[in-house]
Image (cartoon, rainbow, N blue to C red; front, side):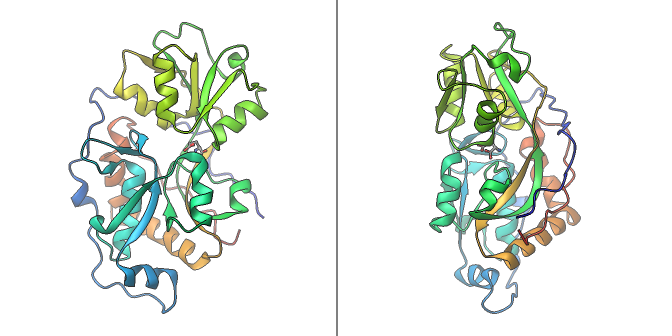
Length: 295
Ligand code: GLU
């Protein structure tokens, strides 16, 4: 088990909330075109998926900017586009991708049970998870932050201020573990639910004082309701997002890492970002150095 290389200092992403609401992404089809008859080593995971002509991907359904199942019934967001880019290089068209909602606590079990072929779901690479699944990437680095009611009535300025307040986060997530383990939140101070949209609703109703998770997820909720919410805006962790795959598929992991690099070179990585999270987060990320697949 190798620990993560330092990918970057605390993510200093400028989370500038644009004026446009984050809507659906109408240019989806132009971001990727499936490769016609790609060729892979016989017996490889890539060859099997290409031959099947379909893939099942775990993603989030309630997180604007990265994975949101909107009125169209199709999930949209940067994670969804990353999955489409990978599928396209396997020769798999968008309509042959089955997206399965994978809330935070379901990601490892879904991969272990092979219920999904990969997970692209704001999924932080860490050693604990790496013991039971494998990760390609990272393809993005977020940071943990705090969402509060507009005007910050409880004057929450950072994670230390969460003691004695009521905070909501999601079971099986790294941000929930961080506020428990590092900032000492007790079970009565931390409400754990299965999906972040429930935390957002609890904050809107005044049932909690704060929501904590990755800045980019929280920014998505602010973009939907700027009059209701604001971000504290001081990230206090590094959350490198990986593409989760079942254990023991190292060549597939290496191939995904190469595919991510190719997506930068052919412009599809940037296009995918601009069409989704980039509508709110104005800085296009640089693809982080891959961590390697021999973990
Ligand atoms: N990136 C963090 C994690 O993987 C928080 C976001 C999430 O739960 O999806 O736990």
